[in-house]
Amino acid sequence: MKSLNTPFLGANDDEATFNGWLVAAGSRVEAGMLVATVETTKAVLDVEAEYDGILHPLVERGARVVPGQPLAILAGEPIDDLQAALAALSAEADANIPFEVRVTKKAEILMRRHGIVLEQLGADTSVVDEAAVSQFVEQRAVNERRLGIGHLQRVGVIGGVGGGGAMIVIDSLLRSYSQQPVCVFERDKVWHGRTVLGVPVIGSLEALSGMLEREELDAVVIAFNRDLGERASLFERLTGEGVPFCNVIDARADLRSLVTVGNGNVILANVYLGAGTRVGDNNFISANVFLEHGNQLGNANAFGPGVFTSGNVTIGDRVRFATGIFVEPGITIGDGAVIASGSVLTVDVPASTTVKAGRRAVARATASTQENRYES
Image (tube, rainbow, N blue to C red):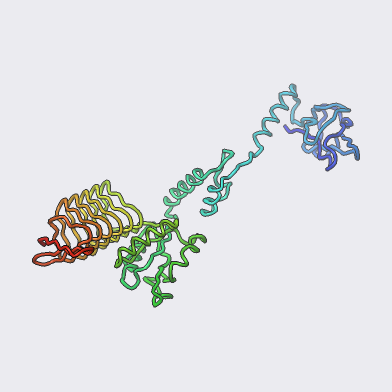
């Protein structure tokens, strides 16, 4: 069952006069047959049947009609109730009319970033917002992971080429199932144009913003750790500029129950973080470091290999640990402290002090001339 509608009348007319039917009501007509005419101020227009069927007229000679108005119903069988049939056709037409969908600006940006077109969303609402697109992206990622397909987070490594930090960070990234190293940003020009484990060293951070804008990079991580003050200030500056950071956590690291990790951290192979331990931002934790349960670690700290803490140790910001260090339970280590290799900490370490290993370890205040001595 289909309706036979008034044709387009031209650019200058929005209504016409129906001149009457050329076939009798109830006659069977074929597609393409001339069945009526309508007259505008300039011309007489033919009305042809678009489908085969029995003609059931809805208008009479002399009626004023407008473009798209139903003139008759064409059906395979006789119709007893024309008004009910017309209502059914109208409801069907309304259901098939696509509604206009508005996409918010943030949703549009997210769609472009992930290569999504509106038809993929199957939107059943008049507004597509950022939340709807994010939900689609997450569900797509779940479906792709089931097939072993998925987007790997593209990571830029900052510095550390000369000291080896870039190499060990890239080594962990190459073993990751969710991340891949893309490039190394290195200010020392001697390394420009070289590669680290196959990853190109492209130069200074001047290229970073352009890569993010071109969506060639998803996040960065800092690989150098010799100057913790510079590491901290660079992290703060880039974060303030909106540069996204990520954690690089080796596949062989062991993070136990209720461990929380901030952002921009490097956690290498065979690191153990005990239950309830909290790690802040921008820390560099080398291989074979054990931080027992309940440890509280601040920001921009650096650990050499083989550092072992007992439970409930509190470590401030920008603390440097060398290698082969043991810390007894409940110890607090202040901001900016430096702990030498071979140290055994049995008492708290004030901020900005250096603990030297030996028969008697000496903790020297780096900001003053005061000395504190600790057994090692």
